[in-house]
Length: 333
Length: 173
Image 1 (cartoon, rainbow over the protein chains, first blue to last red):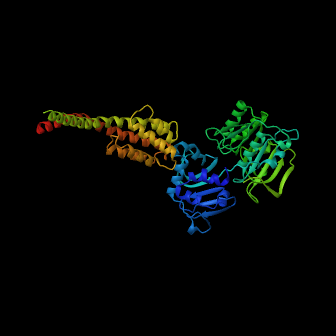
Image 2: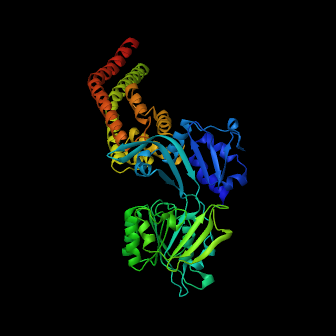
Image 3: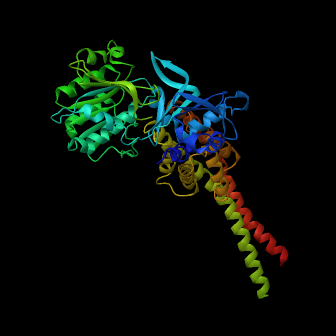
């Protein structure tokens, strides 16, 4: 599905009709470049293209003038939530507590509103006032240029941590790494690996009824919607993967599960929010993985000059900088 | 003579049929309210314990029940599955309008259905459960009223049908 079709077929149908009509009228090129749509009660509808954004007019044109912009009403937001949840908001309580809902196609919808607290935990979100619709795109081949850095000369896959600030293409890169390893690396004359993906947020494989809608290669098993820590151990026991891929490490149990997987002889490829490995070294729970050098490679992504730029590839044991972004290679986004 | 006899028989039969049909309406109303209650109880389970999507829950809660009330829930579920932009309120109302001749529900029950379909699916499980319990409580009261009205009215309309027909025949002869 091309970028414009994603907007037409997967995004517009889940947005309140009044706003969807204007979005559909946008120029094709603009539609294909949208990475996020931001809806905020009483404020203009915003379309984000990478690091720039523009407001949307009712006639479907991008504008910088707030007076001409289409304002998102409370009703638009409620209608959007109603469509996203298919009239079943109660079925998304757990997702709302996490602050996002993933819809068909792997698109993540961030939610902000008034938090209801019970015994120091978020019980639910009410009076939802902002939605951030992040459009997931499959970029086949985006990991091709970094694959030689992720295998040894003997053809062994290396455990890799992808470090990136939000919106720089972590998931897109992980998805293609899964596909490349699963398919095999023809350029390096390496056969495919058995890959297990723990897709807690249903973003990597964008599964529908448990079947991935994204191309993850012929040797990939996906554990959809399962917490990372439980999922990694489940996969090791049940599917005996050679490589485990998972997104956004952060909790204490994630670090423990990664350690256990690595000690089981499985290669782990994961992602984490941050701007460099120095940056995340002292983060609670996962910082220990950096300090004890559990990974073999760090791949750092940035949005400079554009989204999905490889900033740096580091060989952990030697500390060598295998690649540094001087000329800038943009791989996805 | 034969013409009079045939005419009288037809008048009597029509009058009895009208009387029995009106009596049947009174018998059918509490039965449909009971079915409504049964569907709502099943819906409450599907929502609160299984967190099943509303369209599926509406289709499944009518399982094992025959008749227009079950069809109302089933068709509403189908409508919501086919058109995600439709609200439960719109879907219920549209299907109610299409089936209103088969449904023996009166203003009190219809108002309760409208109240039930407002915000349906857009509340948390806890809130949804409270609302469904409240709706079922209201319907149980209406059911009692319908049962109380059923027996005397059924008898009255049956007698009225027979007696009215006989009176018309006597007057015509």
